[in-house]
Image 1: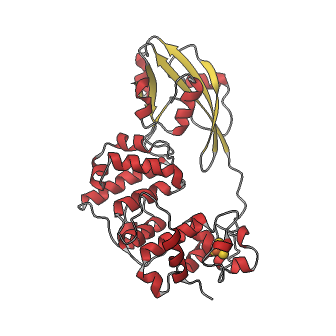
Image 2: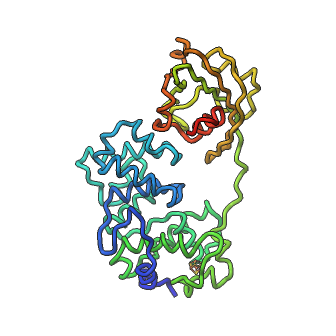
Image 3: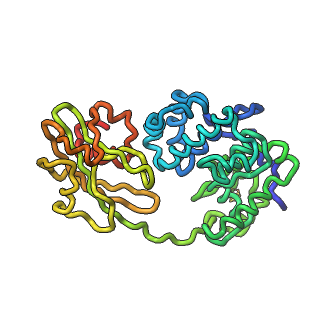
Length: 355
Ligand code: SF4
């Protein structure tokens, strides 16, 4: 028996989540709100995103406001959400949309041409904001689909097969009459009922057609290929302060990890630890450096251990210009586009300062 769209939509009408970017029943969602929330939600939880979403709408009420904002203002508002390439793409996308009058494209092809908009995000905007009959396949929908059809091949190899099955979920007239609600119903089912560890199958509107439940394998799906251990890298960064209440920062290269973000000067990140004698030549100035501790930060593809050194001088030497250094009042630290990793370094070297 194929899963009934009508049953899912009935369930959704009773149990839908209230989310700040979600339109009220019967209303059409604002494409800017949908796009902004979807970019923020990539790799991040709903609870973590909500305060950022409100802050962005306060600062940039329209896509035009976001497009006109300074890059540093956008990065500072984003700081803490991680994956800064997404913030840069977000800004580039806002500018692309503003350049054609501020209206988002309504179809998949137009949406996919925007910076930072992949298949999932394009489908989410097309379905939710423009009522296109497409099924956005995120992690929630992958999980529901693999269980519903008992697809046991492991991710990531099975991704295409899962997507093919997911695309059949909205084949019915009922689903095609309400594409926006149907997409969001799938998200809510995955987030609230068909949860990763212990799906609440007794409450599920699709328990009867669910092959995973029938075969007793639902909770084990989607299967995942074993992951290679995450590699480790090491670095050293230096917190230099002066008597004028300033801190020394520099900007990372535009390309690469944390591209364009501010950082404490430091070494490259390499597979082997830095001995103190090896690291100190990379310090931004001669000073009485003290080892201030080690912090660990987990990126998607590696774990980074950073030895943090701290020193205080009367005034910064002229040579800081050679390393692209900039003196910033430490009172301004909280409003700067400083990535979480660097905030951890500042906190390690300077615990008495709440960052
Ligand atoms: S019956 Fe259980 S496993 Fe199947 S879709 Fe519903 S919650 Fe998920």
